[in-house]
Image (cartoon, rainbow, N blue to C red):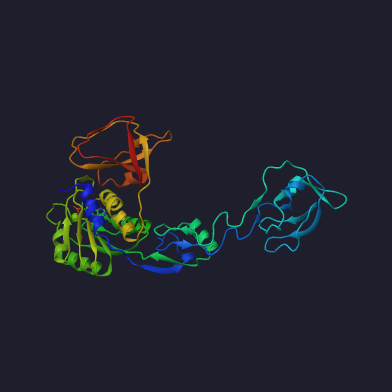
Length: 391
Ligand code: AMP
Ligand code: MG
């Protein structure tokens, strides 16, 4: 049995890059940028009015000013206002040269003579200067970033309509166990529904990779080997759940070896998820995750998700919070690191949720996150600060 830290290191060191591809910026949401985005323009591209108003010289504020033209957004000024002159100007329009301030329509009065006067008190010039947000040649988005809607707006602004992103790895998911039926079916006596496959495919997609489901392998070496071999041929990562414990029909590790996988570990000192198995094949990385759905969920989040992110060039870290415990917690044995599902209360305390063990799938939807209890630690005290990992 190895520590979680060692298992994490082995998994991360096995990662290989997925390559890159060019796609349209409009299709890039949640993908990982593979090259910096560089601006081909200054932003704003000209000194720009930030309000609707009148452009003039600051020294003329309060005086009666002649309006010499109207500048609308999308048009260039044709005249240069002189002393005691101004131009009516709209938000987003270029400021006429020689003008160093714009007073707002709301702070102005049109006089019977047709002239205009500033009636407010001066606070700011209401001009956004050329290049003050971004300069031509600036890096506006860095490689390795997960692309969000606001990044797509930046790409549009700087004209990056084709972007380099890392290719999504394909993750094959296999369930195993004679007791499993698919969710559409009503389980017979001694059967349960397969909840791991859909959960894992959703976790894969949330991680930004693509998932492919290969069905249920029966507790039969030949059937398992056939499905595993096909998945290894087609995918960058293969996850098989079930069949990794110590039961009479738990032969996933031996089937993986038969398929040409070099097993790097079969036990981690964690709870839940001890029988987590990992191996490498020249075509794919392979995980054997415990069949219990909470174990497979947690092991995916702790080991597989960071690996997927590393392969896509994304330096992902889970979101964490430091918060105090609402109540104390004690466990009988501290040989393994433990993850416990928790809720964050209205008052900002961490509260354990009822958790009967790694088959208790209905406990997870309630959880805001998990906390980890290190090896050799049996007790967490009330009010002790703990790190909540968002799940
Ligand atoms: P195993 O790892 O095969 O020993 O399975 C451990 C437990 O997880 C058993 O109670 C299985 O019935 C259950 N289990 C295995 N695979 C799944 C699955 N795909 N969905 C839900 N439960 C499962
Ligand atoms: Mg089984």
